[in-house]
Length: 177
Figure 1 (cartoon, rainbow, N blue to C red):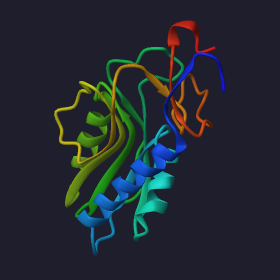
Figure 2 (tube, helix red, strand yellow; figure 1 turned 120 degrees about the vertical axis):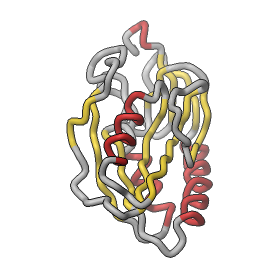
Figure 3 (cartoon, helix red, strand yellow; figure 1 turned 30 degrees about the vertical axis):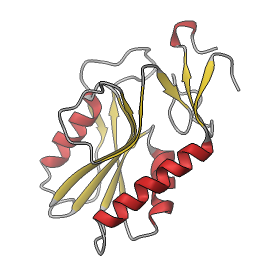
Figure 4 (cartoon, rainbow, N blue to C red; figure 1 turned 180 degrees about the horizontal axis):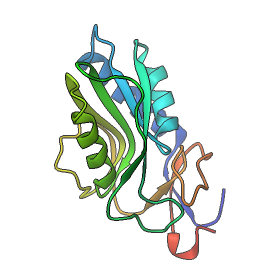
């Protein structure tokens, strides 16, 4: 493990959280086949584990936005760089996000998908930062966390640390090393 990383959640805690979320989602989507839209890149590991835990039919698509890139701070507005390919019109859609912080990215995603006329549009996040900004209802929340930049389990700092099996906070002031 790299210096400057502080443990946040172990792989076991992540699995337990995903199991709980999967149970809630299964109950809400019983006898339906929702489209799960993963927000790239950070949510890809969470989405894969969530799909396996759901043990029900789903369709999957991805959307990608740019807000950090290799910068330390996000841009004021998230821009869609890869749109979904499936038609969501009249379908049940569940957006799967890794972390909601300021809410800028998820607002852009939800506004964009609402314009495609889904039957239902819900939101699932593994992590919600305390005071995290979005006026939208978050239907499924894995864990609420305090301040800090989170890496591991698919989440990165300047494209590093995605491979870590657990979640950590990192001090970005020292460059993460």
